[in-house]
Length: 367
Ligand SMILES: Nc1ncnc2c1ncn2[C@@H]1O[C@H](COP(=O)(O)OP(=O)(O)OP(=O)(O)O)[C@@H](O)[C@H]1O
Image (cartoon, rainbow, N blue to C red; front, side):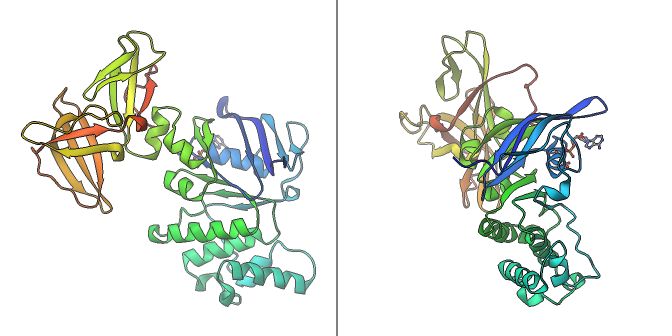
């Protein structure tokens, strides 16, 4: 098996006695994009700065292609780590042309440098801007030039810290996709920091979900989304519904019948978590609903509280007849039943997550 292009092991960093990076380990393979995803202040940027060599860990090691580049005694200087960087403010040099900006970190023959500059400008779709100056370019174009500049010296690793945050919301997805194409064509190993789940899902081969200085879950976007490690991890990617119950004889009673909770002792509290898109809605037939099915379980009667059109989907809030709790369901396209309409809800049991309630996890879903 090939060595990871980048590997960090057991990194810790403390500021004024407070640990902000706690035992973080991860690997990035060549040609792979790993996203370090988490809320503001969880330690993402600090981790990236340590890898770049502009900050120093208190414990742990960093390896590039299997070679140690930094532990707490040995340290390869940042400029010798073959690491490219793109941070939030990717400021180009205003007095240099596009070509000069991209060539900035390049050594060697003038003709070789020019060839590399043109190759990269072609890849980012801005060969025609070669002689322009940064002020003549839009924000998105400047971002693409900054990407070309960072990639020009062929770094084996690219570190990107919220590189799209300054861009117009409507441009972001296009620029993310074209950036990804360029990064893949260069076979660079990328570690991208973001607090936006959508960005991580769109860009990443692998997501490392970070919370309070620790990586709490790591895996392919599909797995992180569909098998979250806990309630907060589920809530980071979408709105969630939470049905809390107490275990009795290995099961919990809910508006949708009994849920099996193997391994949970009597009296233990559990949260049954379901995303709004996994609730199914059916019509009321004079007080009767659809028949139970093995997959959807028992339907539960509910009354529409309110319905809103959200653009791609409609969000409908229901009050459950069983216990007065409120559950949210999303429906593709336009579905706006009137408040007070009785309906039936079913939930895909294979899409529910059951988590034991930990002390202190009562109300907040902040990751
Ligand atoms: N040089 C420093 N001195 C003291 N505290 C610091 C320093 N750098 C970062 N911190 C603290 O460490 C914690 C983690 O910061 P960091 O910038 O790594 O988080 P982040 O997840 O990247 O957040 P954001 O997305 O807001 O940048 C924060 O509480 C921050 O205030």
